Image 1: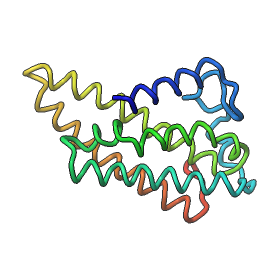
Image 2: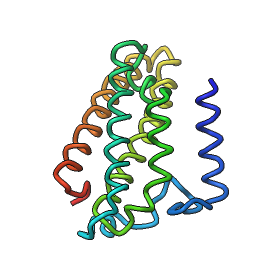
Image 3: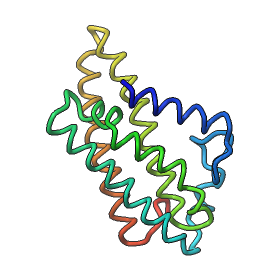
Image 4: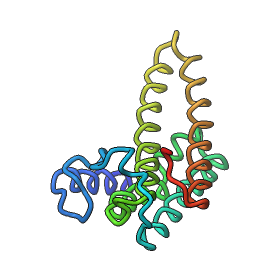
Length: 165
């Protein structure tokens, strides 16, 4: 529970202060458009390392969830590796601005937040007796979607290619 509280505190601070380098007043939104994020400028080396670390942390979260969690999506969103990965994303994405690597930060951040959205929808469906089969099917679909998003993103990062090109 402490990790979740710490996560929301950091998100709240980032959202309301925007004082850290590279953060907008709405950290879930990129300052640059998808087209601008795919520019061919070479990113700062540390932003590439951070992007690899984030993909690695998300992969660890998925593996841990597969091995011991009730649902992979719940394990992905609630695990410490994934929470740390999102915080790193918000802190380091400024170093990738104007380069092709910025699209990876956008991809990683959106993966986390959309997974949370789909989890909430699935839980609401499961709570209703009629929607329960759809909710469980949605959990399976989102699990496969998470694995796809992390694998595709990491492979494109290894090839030094932007996500949205």
